[in-house]
Length: 383
Image 1 (cartoon, rainbow, N blue to C red):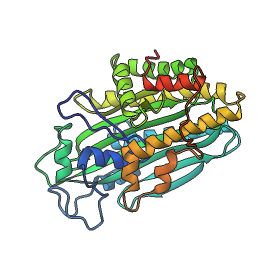
Image 2 (tube, rainbow, N blue to C red; image 1 turned 135 degrees about the vertical axis):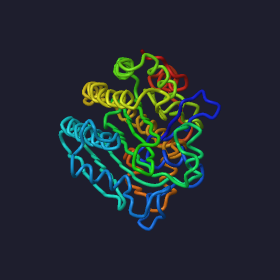
Image 3 (cartoon, helix red, strand yellow; image 1 turned 90 degrees about the vertical axis):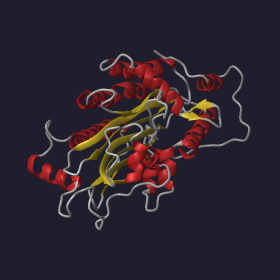
Image 4 (tube, rainbow, N blue to C red; image 1 turned 60 degrees about the vertical axis):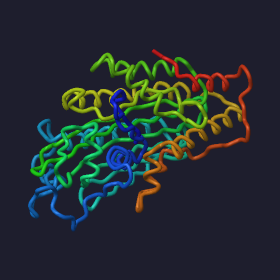
């Protein structure tokens, strides 16, 4: 749920990238004050549409029933199919790695189209808690929201009273048991608005992934960043440096003066002003495809390392920092918790099962713990 394109006079809104990324996307990019809601059944006609004109949700349902999802399908359907396929692949890989627990799968449908799938594993052998979520939302943006969003997306029609929108994405957070193994976060998403005839009006992609270790193994961080950089370089040689900087700036625990972790990439609002739709979809596909190769070797290497009770307590202190960022600075989490009827369990899926706050704790001078804190206070160029 966190997001941007940074050097504009009016900076692109940075959406939070947690499990409620959809809510944050709509909130911080569109409204500023009041979020648009999914289209109610008794809503007035969509901008210029007739009463019996089908919504994009209805069009998409019909299209999937008649033709399935192909390379010629709207990007909405292709992105939805892509994230659901990758959710299943990631869940299978993590279950095989953990070996002791299965994911609890929670599916739901939205009355006016879309829905979600939450997959959560708890108290496993490898993972204390692991969540892999997908969400698909159809709704309507009011005129005020459209006006705000036009700062970054000129394709939006400023003269309509409302526009239908679609948003979809995959979000995951993995908290390992072993303090030598790092937490990891990932989110990739797509947003578009539709014209009255159901054709696409404006669209953009966002996402990223970042690593949060309790104990720093340089080789692990280098491996993680190298995998991300290779994915970025396959599409644009400038992407990695741009999006790493964006990640370091966004995932900052400002009241502590340190970053949440050792970074990765973060981007948002990538639309036709960046590249064409197919090129950006291919970029997102490559990034998501790079996740398991960039993370699984790290967790496989660290999962069974010996550790002391003191090191476990340090992990819990770092988990406390993770909680602080998500509850204090993550816009999407704040939005979700203040939204009536929100799925609180999904919103808080990103939090670890356990964490610790110790009064005036300071790491020992010259210790591994102090080195981690020093790195978090000044981001490093890992590759």
